[in-house]
Image (cartoon, rainbow, N blue to C red; front, side, top):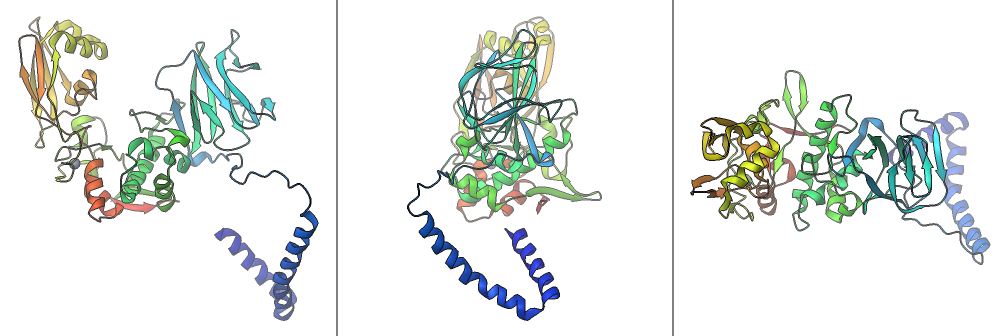
Length: 437
Ligand SMILES: [Zn+2]
């Protein structure tokens, strides 16, 4: 809108230069009178006609802006044998490798059908066969594509890989964020929490887009491996307002090289103190905002600030660890556990597993936790008690890895009247919120 007003001003100035102020003023004065006449005439002319059916809520086809386009891998890491697909408007199917080649086109919607690979490497969408195994579906309207019951904005890439399908949503960054916030935050959270989460989520995904290896076909997963993304389903009032009110804003930290984007990690409840990024991700860069040690007295209301003891048999624990780290099998059944490094806030950084064979293996605490189950062991902040055939993890505190922003602490701060920028500066010390587009 602002661009339109600016262009109008330029036209008026040019007209004044050409025709003189008097004539231009007369023309401008005539515009309202002319408009009213036209509207009245329009009412008269079209009053008795059946109006054209125009659905004002329908948004036009999504435009692809490649510098702001997020590639979200849907349905997890594994390729699928078939995917349930529907398109609620007309659409084109284009070749992904030869961008302008239209392989199929339909004026009508595509009813829910199973998308499968064909024997010759092509794709079949219900009764619609496409002679290519790497395609991009362009709907005529936005928010028209539904995959396994969830509706998404933007476009959909379907790729056949070894007879199975991977599906990736190509979506504008701001639209993507609308589908992330409700996936990450409870509905009742404060509007300032939504804004802080939005800026953190925008920064996180931009960072991931920059570091994604060239050969990879996506930037983020739609699950906890990256950020929970639930598509159009997530677009409540608070989420939409937060995205609009913080449009283009990200967290950076100032350095000799200028403002640097960093990976804005966040978790549900830090349990009292955030931890250093390298405790969990030893190979990640460690900018000052991720140095940890932020004392958080504000997540004590969180459901899992303190969690109930968890009992797991030694056999079960061994099985879960070996499933993720097959080499651990060589030490035999895990007989005892010894935290080798505990950071000041209480998170176990490294844990040694002693096996029945008399040998041992050591894992990063967070990797150990995720192998056992991220919802079973809510954090790496716990004590271990040994029973004959089981381990009891007790005095557990916090939920998630505890790096960066603490979502429950953020909510308490928002309720106390802090604005989103102050909250972000607290949990990412030294960071600044800047607008980049
Ligand atoms: Zn906290």
